[in-house]
Every structure is written in C-alpha cells, then in structure tokens.
Image 1 (cartoon, rainbow, N blue to C red):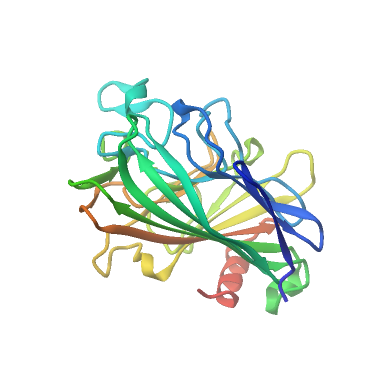
Image 2: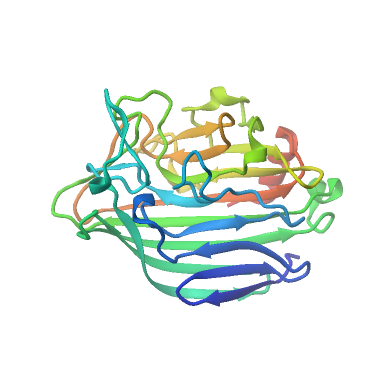
Length: 320
C-alpha cells in the first residue's frame, strides 16, 4: 500500500506535498513569479527521495534559469520561454531580453491529497515578452506509488530501496491566429542541443552520473528515441545514490509511429546532469491555431543506483 500524502499550500507562493509516514517533503511546486530574464514559470524544487535527499538543482551559476523540473519552450515562434540568452545561428547565445516570455500561473482547479495520491491541477497562460497571450496550458501533476524499502510488491520490494512517482501532464492550446512553432537550438543550427519541453536539472553532485536506456547507456543516448531513460547519481553530504526514471506515456507516440511528432531524448552528464524528453529536437513542431499539444510523462524517484534489470522489473510492476 502506498504511503499517505499531505499538502501544504502557501497561497501565492508554493504547494508542498509531504510523505506523512517519514515527514519528507517530496516536492515543492513553486508558482511565484521570478526574474523576468529567467522566463518566469512554475517549477518543482526541491524534489526529494524518500531518504530525504534532494535530486534537483536551482539557479546554478552556469544557467540561472535552470530550476528543478519545469516545462520549457526554448524556441517558440521567435520567443524564448526557456530563459536566459537566446541561441542565434552563427552568433551563439545572445542577450535578447525582448524575446524572453513567460508561463504565468492563472489558477488552480484542484489541489488535493487522499490516501497515497496527490493532485495539483493548474491553468497557465503562455505570454510573449510584451504580455500578448499566446497559449493556454492545462497542467496536471500527480504523486503516487510511494513505496518505502520493502513495502512494495514483487522483486523490487525484496531488493529494498524506496521509490515514488510523479506524473506530469500538459495540454497546450494555441490562442494565436497563426501557428505556434516549437523548436530548439538544434532546429536553429546547434548540434546536440535539442532541449525543449519538460526539463530536469540534476544537482551538481550528479555530474558524471550513469545514463541508461532500454538498449544503450551513456551520453551517446543524446538524440535517441526510447520509451524510457534513467539517470543515477551519487549524493554529496549523504552516502548513496539515487535514480530517476523518465517515461513517455503510451499516447505520446514518442517515435511518431502513429503520426504524431516524434520525440528524442536530450541527456547530459557533463558539464551538468540534465534530461528532457524533447518534442522538437531535430525538427520544429507546428501547432495550428486552436489546436492542442498534449503530452504526459512519469518521473520515478528511487533511492539507490538501479541497473537496467531492476528498472525493467519496476516498470513491468507499475504499468501505465
């Protein structure tokens, strides 16, 4: 049975979800606006394991706009809803504040915790730098499957190591009278920089961590396709490791086999730890006026360095 969850809402600032058995704050979902240059948007930080170890970073010195887990749009019809400098082909990254937009919190439709499940359902407005309303987003974040060491089912429980899962769903509707074009630095000429969409920045200690996919390992998984990708790192200040498993929901059609836009993994372990299931890695995604782009992902947060066999067993025991 999943552990009970509780919610604390500091209105206008953040929502914290707590695993009540151990008193661990698993996430803080921060929706208070921050610096304009960083493309203000809600984000999750800190994100913790059940052993109370933080597995996200916040405003690192190399990229101040990297904040835990957040939905991003690095190139959006000429705007930058990612933050910081904007990549311009032939000129590298340029300070172009007039291109930096925002994803503004509008309201919550549901904030609730019951038994072993918590929900944050939110409405957001995506805006041009000048405040023009470009898109609406309906976002749903759920926490579930909270299992302490030995409390789950099957082989995973027998091996120990607590884990829990976050599901993130975003539905983005174009409110312009012309298409919204989602891109990335790679679609604009920079190799191996296809980040956009849901983005995780790991803590500094996770540099050089282990990257695993169903059929491969290491940084060479950059730009590849797979239903899941995992990242393991070793903590500073505490003994041990943690593993994060990122999954596409089946309806994402990540390989484009059913006619949707394909996705590819953005992943690095140097010079920093980062993962994004990019939906505009090599080619722009065009969203027509009035159309909605929907994507759903899971992030499982586990104590310990999980190998491919253990990951596969866990995913088989926790299907969509």
